[in-house]
Length: 204
Image (tube, rainbow, N blue to C red; front, top):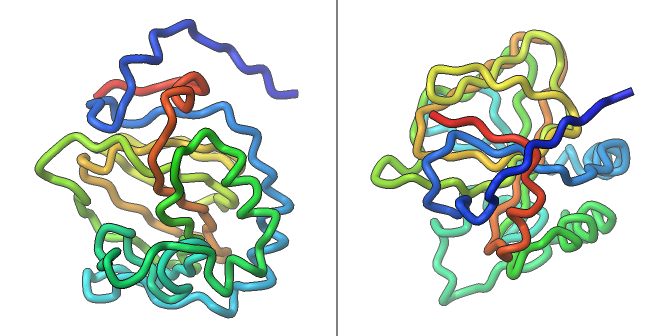
């Protein structure tokens, strides 16, 4: 039995420029359904950002510019092509439908991000010049031995936990296990009501 203690807070203070390290959302994630669809497309994974020194970090795009275009949406020329459901996304209809049920005004990209056994994401900052509380990072599997560190603090991820992360802060991930660590990442323009679903938050 999972007991959730909710704290009354002024959710209007949260927006993309908030300085908090992360906020945990109360979205009910259909983990088993999403993982079933992941299993059907995992052979489409490509190595993600190998030029940055990461090890065995893989990804596939469900909604974006193409399934093998796994960088963030702002790194591609939207004048040439608009983000849309990819061929892999077409094979994950329940995942796409669930993401579309969230309070977004616009979806920009949806990706599976996977760290293979003994892989890691090196220390990095995505947006050093500003606070940016932006991507919805949803944990689908988190085997014992994994470690996610944000701003020198370990994040206690568990499967089904959706966090909006502030990628202005330095972070890194280690998968010291024999299993895949699987997350679903969503970028998009949030409606104001999105912030009504904050469960907890961490100040820097």
